[in-house]
Length: 289
Image (tube, rainbow, N blue to C red):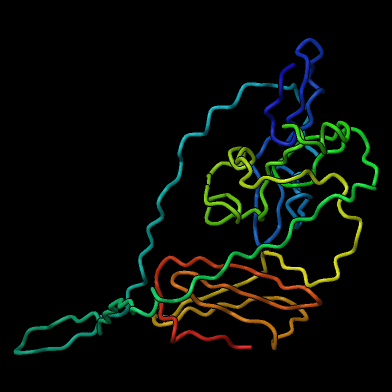
């Protein structure tokens, strides 16, 4: 049996049964923008990564196990010039002198206190475990990210053998400036297909049905909030858009080249991390509500 490499398909097939309508896949790459996830070839957009992986293909064709050649690098560098200001002129000793105006020089000074900022502890919650009293249907796939193993029977999938071991990611997907990875491990890749192949970084038991209990504690999760920003010669002003936030229990933490946002709303904490391209003055930064 062969495995199809088309995005959105990845099913096993027999070449003798392959035809022009056997494969349902996405011919275009994925797109992630302002918290929404989807494919460039179709209009559907979702907010969670699991929903994104479940979007059915939009094009019919033959299965294939041959990877396509990567497209040639057609990236072009856009060079923009600041609009020229009207030159000021003056006359000295009969000679006309042109002046482009005052010049401002910015010197970046990194305070020692920046490097002494305490590191934030990773945000983790206890992994959910299966309730062994809840029956599991055959071929049920493990719910943990990047595992992919299916339930066979209790002895095989919940015993002590190799099939009972779950290798998964305990964090959430992170897509930043073209790189893709998981919040729980350091590996980052550029291609979405390579992202799906990143091996899990944590070992445990499979999660086929869950605990069956409602979570009453405050839920902590890392999500993308809609945001906007603009820059002046001395400041960067960033706006975060989130409804019904309890500002008394919310916070913003500045550290080195990162900004950690913690918003408390309706019984859960929403975390989001912004990565900056340069150092900034932590003690001169603040939050407005």
